[in-house]
Length: 136
Image 1 (cartoon, one colour):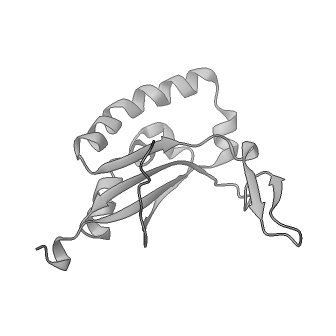
Image 2 (tube, rainbow, N blue to C red):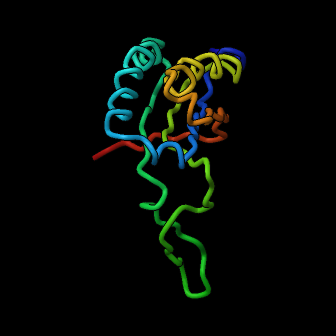
């Protein structure tokens, strides 16, 4: 039997960036970011605590579904347009939010020098419910 303090929790880490700066980057800027990210990504993976790690497409490619009088209504674009959209997400398993923050702090988005220009950051939020669906 495990005590409540030994129970691992799941935390969603939302990586935001300044969209105007991102859109101003050249292909060489993007290549430099990929290269700068590699050592930080390795450190993040080495924790063994990252369950999911993915980047998101640009906000304008999103579709938003809202309730409507006659059923769901789909619109083009993000749910809430913002100058600092989320560009990546990852989920970590940790004992508490402090451990989750220590793990998230290894992410390239707050370490690679190129990201300092983007003035983004990472929001860490505990998942109140997490269920991994089995694939068939």
